[in-house]
Image (tube, rainbow, N blue to C red):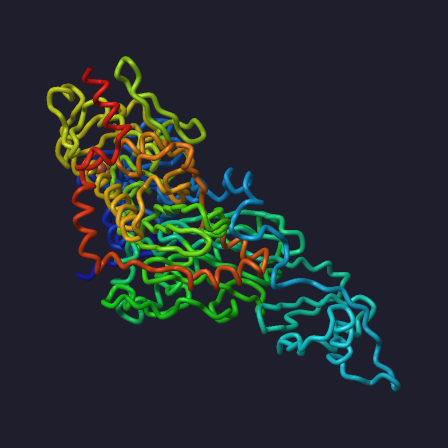
Length: 639
Ligand code: FES
């Protein structure tokens, strides 16, 4: 007998729908559609990690068994304990975009706007010009377009303008409505000079742009008024491609079949369109008024945005399809913008150092002078690094993994509401926590995990290889499905009502991530023949969260042991760079010339990298001399 699919389950924010039989397990259904879900107890209902929010529909009894009552009253259930008995709309809380606060603003940027590598000015490639046309007459029977071009020349000086076909199609009507008051929207990027819209002035047409950072995990977007440069609205969300793999390598593998490449392309377009709708609705504006989009992202994300085959990014000799992307039309990508909107993608340096880094450099002072050497560390799912100054730059990328973004660690989460962003052990050997928005703790974001690792190490709970020290951890460990785990916080004190713990394997994963980043730094400085002390400034970008404790990051060997004043947290430098390009064409030119100065060090073919990496798999490092202040601290402790 063939079982009938009775119910539809819809997962948000991914808008995935699946038909299921009555009585199907919600957890199995989530797995069936490949959505990521933590299930460290294996689905027996004890870890409390598989919580989801039921937005509509009813579920089986006992679905929320064991969850705190205040959580149950908000509609949460455990997916592993839920049988489907109705059409359901389900929100995955780890992907609840209401709670995502991608670092879209940056104190550093706001305070240093006049001292960054990019130009902070409002002079975008798209602008609006108001014209007063001569009406057609027997004496002046030039074509409508010719009369418009004459007025443009009067206003801007002689230039060769091309008129978009969509403009020609409506020009006759517009210029006859009120020839005294016509607004002309122009795009002038490099040699391209195009009339992309004409509208009656009375419409008071907005001219909008978007700056968008396409991260492997999250996508963030600013909606900007191109007339005055003001940010009107900001939106961020998870990259819907996550269901096809968490990092760039798994996305490239997924895209090996043409229909799957198309699927990944469609998913990123859906994600961006969703954010465009959200941002324009928030600002009460129309997406058809968006005439320009400036995008940044790693090389794989931009390939998938443009529907290009990314496979050669990870095949020897690691050649991407492009470094510089020509300006493309939003219409060709099915982006919900004006049909004539122009799209610029920040250029890539290599397969694993993309436009997120070239754009990111603009939002730091790295190019300000030829004397000081600076280091930029963008620690996303893929760690990207640049060292250099105004005259030269060297760059590389390492597979840091998403551990510090909260992925693959039971207690980890993105830097969003309820994330523990700082951890300190007090004199009574009890942890003190600070959470984002002072909410009840849900997990630890990157900065919290850095603190936790440092505190466990400094206070003797783990040794230099990250293993629990049995004498010091008596009564602090608990048995879990994943093995022994250190108890960070009791369930009664957490939002979800389950214990926050970290296992030795997860500690090892954090050590691998910090080791990958530090060894890439080491290889860069060795390649250019300098010492860490020659670095004047270190700019840190990416997913750690804004409260990264530099002291703790040095203690675990993530960052080099330098004067603490040299470190600056710059936030989402990629998004800020995309914003700078959106606002000024000088930045587009600057970023395009930048790639010629950058030498790309391919770590995949660099035999010394593995040696450096192996040394960095200890706290802080096998060579303690590389971390003199950490060594001193232990010497003083012993005395
Ligand atoms: S997987 Fe559901 S409670 Fe652990």
